Image 1 (cartoon, chains in turn cyan, orange):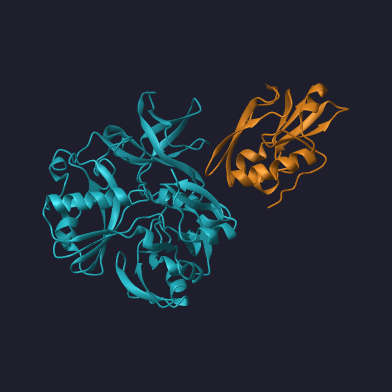
Image 2 (image 1 turned 45 degrees about the horizontal axis):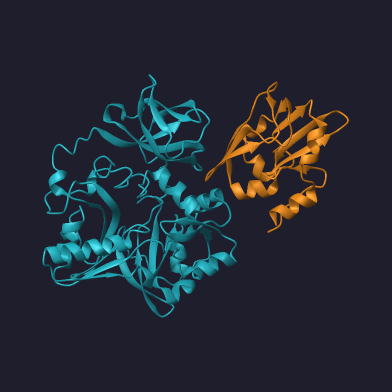
Length: 362
Length: 129
C-alpha cells in the first residue's frame, strides 16, 4: 500500500525527523527524543503535525440528524462553535472509531476520524444519509487540511505570540481564525491531557502554520506516551472492530453514550451493556519491565485475565504503565496483577487513569 | 548524521561492541552510538548475571527504549565477570555514554579465535553509513 504523506513531509525530513508508517500515513515519530518532546509538552509547550487525522464535513438541513444517527453522543447539545467527544458504533454497539464532532454552523458539522478511517467513515456517512433519505452533503476534506496540535501549559501564550486570538476559545470549542491570510479553524482540544489547541489550515498554508509556532516539534512517539499517561484510547489498538471488538462501556467511555438519542448501535447499548463483563483498566508495574501490546495480564493466582493493549515506560512517572482489558471482578483500583514479559511474571497493580494529573487546570 | 566509532573497539553487525584485552583474554562489551540513537530513549536493560556464560552471535540480553524492544547479541563467547549494575537504575547511560559509563558486561575466558569474525571500526563505520 502506498503511504500518504502529510503536507509538511519535506519540512520534517529537513528537520531530520525519524518517520514511521501509521494508519497508512508516513508520519514523524521522533524529532529529538521522545523524552525531550514529552517533557516539553508537560512543562511548557510542543507542536505536533497531526495531518494524518481525518476531516469530514457534513453540511445541509439534515446534517445534525445524520451526525446524531452515526455518533453516540447527543449532537443536539452542541451550540455553534462547540465540540464533543463521541464513539462511532455499528449495529452491535461495537466501536468502529472514536472522534470529535464540531458544530461549525447550525447546519454544518466537522468530525475528525482517526488516521486511515476517513474514507471508511465518509462512505458510511453517505450510505446512511441515503438509507435514511437525509438532505445533506458529506465531504471527505482530509487531503485539503493540514492539522497541527499545539499542546502544553504555555500553548495559549504561544498562540497569542503567533497572532492567533485564542483567549475566548473555551475547552472543546472551535473558532475561525485568520493566519497568513487564510481562514483556519482553531479548537481547544488535544490528546495530551494538557491545555492546548488543534489547528486546521488549508494545505497551501501548512508550512506557515507550522513555522508560526516557535517551540519543540514532537512526533507520534511522544503523542503516544502523553495520551497513555492520561488513559486516552488509541483507535485500532485499545479497541478495533476486527481484532478487539469493544463497546464504549467496555472501553471506559460510556460517558459519550446517550441512549436517549437514536443512533446506530443504540439498541445494543442499553442495559445490560452498561455493566460489561470486561473493561479497560490501567495498571502500573511494581517490578522493572515494560508492558507491551499483546502481553498477557494474569491474576495473582496465575490465571489469565486478558492482554495489554498499550504500554510504555511513563516518562513523567518513571514507571511502567499500560492499559488492557480484564474481567470487571479484577478491575478495582489496587488489585494485584502481573504482566508476562518474555515468560516472566512482573507484578503490578490496577491503577485507573489518568496516571498523570495534567499540570494545568481545565 | 555521523556517529562516533572508536578505533579501539571491534563490532558486531548487530551494533554491539567489544573492547578486547588479548593478553588477559577479557573483553568489555556494550552497544554502539548508532544503536542507541536508533533505539531512542532507553528505559530498560536486561542482562545475564556474573558467572553466566554467553555465546558469540547469540542473544544475551534485552534493551528496551520507549518505542522498541531489541535483543542484544554477544560479540564474543565468554564467562560474565562483571555486570554494569548502574544501567539498571539509570538506563539512559546507554544513550549518554554508550562507549563509557553505559557499558554492559565484562567477559573473561574469551576465545581469541572468534575475534576475526568481528568488524573493525572502519568496516563498522561503512556498515552504518
